[in-house]
Length: 228
Length: 290
Image (cartoon, rainbow over all chains, first blue to last red; front, side):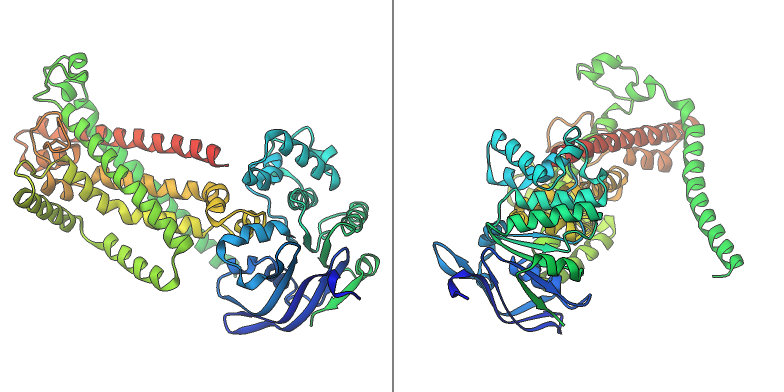
């Protein structure tokens, strides 16, 4: 397969919590317009790996990373993610979006949760309104919340919050989408719809999914990595 | 756990809660029974006309009005100095400091919190003497020195509660903002502070109460028995806690002592007003920040 299609290359990655090695010599590549699944037993470091990719692991006390994570950037060639300075991280995280397994809605309204990253970018009200609506439609949440956009996001069910968090990340249209168990709070019907959405999303970007469901991995992924 | 030990433990918890409530209740009832009969406009304004006294057209000589104004001024001034410094220091310790720096600061603020207030008063007095000798002979112990000394006294409460409230915001919540491209400062403003503002304001309320009740600090730094309404930050002033202390120590008859209880009720009422104002501010901030 062509080297040009590689979007992220992880080389000899070690991750420590305190002095405990939780990921050892990880080597992986994630390609453009492909959906890659990461599987493995609980506690093997799947979520940690995702958090390394957009440097959110920096916010975890006593976590330490060695090795290299390179991100292909159209205008700058390869970008060493682990060497980026503090001021470059917001832009990295907009490019490499991460949706957590457990929904972590912000303590504000449904609308403002999705509008939050757009407000940070200083977009106009019209742009924000249309992008929020479109993201909520994409994750099949619009019909359920269109009449209560100003209600607190905390009032939504677990499944609705999970889709809200997905919408909040999609609204930025990240080049790389990292999803940690994206359907764990959803019923079968919604899970199928989200899977279809992921297949559609991978046509435009790199998608990395952590999943416990083998059948889901088989259905969705172009590549599978197993962490032990 | 066995049923009987569970019951004993539950009973102990209930009793402890009840004792706390009972002590507060007893204290309040005692104060009101003793002080309510002496409460009157005459206690506050003496022989002066209340309206003219309120708009500062007539001086109050034998009432508590100057002490009420003095207490309110010194409390508001001291928390005004302490709030920005305390909250900023708390934010720094919780969000930006390294482990070593945090340990040094934690230790320093613990020591500051444990210093007896009379020592802070003594320090304020020394500063006033130093300023008088070296900068201006117009500077004496005054409202400004008192308020700064009280700010030092209440600073650890605000720093600690700010730090702990911010540190208590769960990691997934912080990560939510950052993962959406917020910078550390944007995340602090939009995500972390709205979640911790209630705790921070609790520290401010604690500081208000502490500043309002302290006598040792103000006794050495500017309060006097008779001064009238303070005309400037460099003026001496009267204060209710000092009045209560002074009357309790120097009263000549029972009626005079009862005015001390009246002053205590007024002091509690001022605190209640300040607490309500802090709560309203909290609600406003939560709305604004989120």
